[in-house]
Length: 135
Image 1 (cartoon, rainbow, N blue to C red):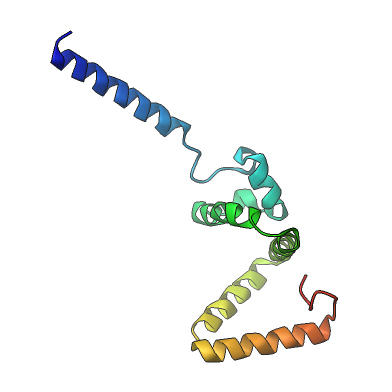
Image 2: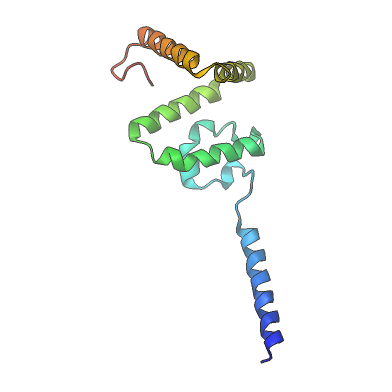
């Protein structure tokens, strides 16, 4: 077989493989039913809201799944509780939470840390539990 025919066939095979892998790629904004079992388990608190999320928001949440899977069981429960709390908020409450988060992030590091420490102490005083006031 001539050299150019071999190169042509190799190039054709490479293009077919590339095309097949492009179609095998998961969707960028999958519906809930398109998530795998692990993703559904981790993101279960958001299942009723999932299909309404923007593609960017879905990708951000999907990127967290491997990190959440590496947490201890107690930490996983805490994340799951937080996701449930977030899912239960109204749109207005979520907007307010985002506004406060941005406000917190704009503070100088020392001031931000003082505020977080005060908030943590207040939460512990209001909700004394064996694990230090954390869900």
